[in-house]
Image 1 (cartoon, one colour):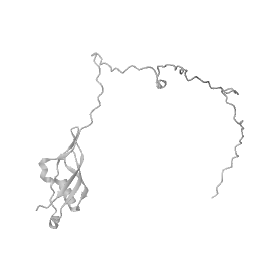
Image 2: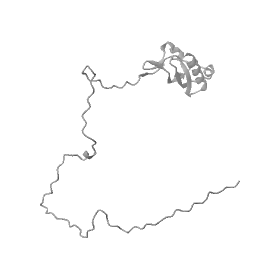
Image 3: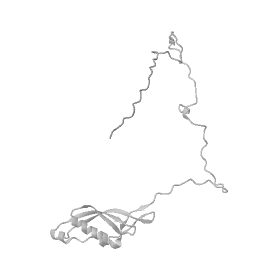
Image 4: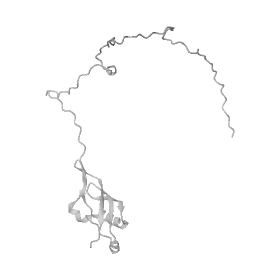
Length: 185
């Protein structure tokens, strides 16, 4: 393969323009006399200042004065239209345990851990569907994975909730719960 380089372009011509050093100012005529400062006597009062009714911000005002807003009237009634009131934020009510299934919230103690005399805690994040049933269980922390497996099995099978609502409509929600496994003495 051979590569062909593009043709070289000639350099652009340049011209130097020389400017005179320190040109005189354009707007002011050249004067050789310097104005002499005037001296006042100490007893002379200061010269009067012009009085203005404008404020320093008047120069930034845009346009003429605007009349205050008056709400429109409802046609044919002579009454003022009520102001717009934005809708209220939706009311969210958290899911809570269904008291009819309170006993189901205590999972069975794993027999192997009873024999070993181990106690522990499990914290789980449960997803509750709009019917109030547990649809997913995620482990946050557990002292023993066997405690988590038993809690997960029990939650998916038996835990029932009164579903969370948003403006009275049942919605899916997530809740974090802790289950304590303690041996009875």
